[in-house]
Image 1: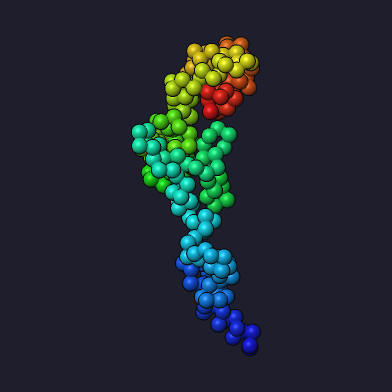
Image 2: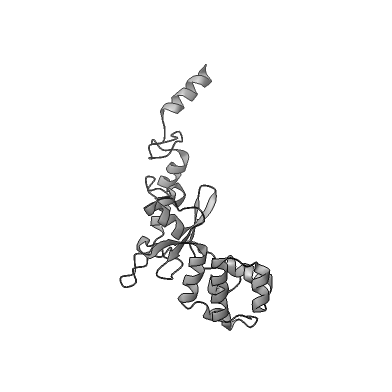
Length: 202
């Protein structure tokens, strides 16, 4: 009975910090928040891990650039320069997360493109939806294909790469046929199709 009474008593006294569901240990705080208080911190200021995904996104966005208007993600960025944030058990690109928060769910198979051509930017005014082929065309149009030519093993010019993108968009040909037409391997065409391989498609 004593053990039951102790358990019921503990359940009645939760940590006074908002969102914390732990039982209080001292001064109305759980052990974690009490330790933070003793170390000189404010137990009522949530840590980064305690923030919701939306709050974590906002906490890591830099103040928008006064000229360009880009609100850049200052947290982790993948090798392509895009920010990433954990939402539940998944890592999501921050610009896609920002778009979904503002405009709602992203239709299946659609990409979120940047008007500003700045990968870490999460400004919703700079984001728009497009297909994967739209994304590849946008990259070539903005001149990022120049880096493809600079690669020592690049066999395609900007013009050829653009033509491949157009053929992929219209369909009607197998990847093998397109590869033969341009004198490259099927894997090169596949990389272009899926936005991999050439730096200008990243």
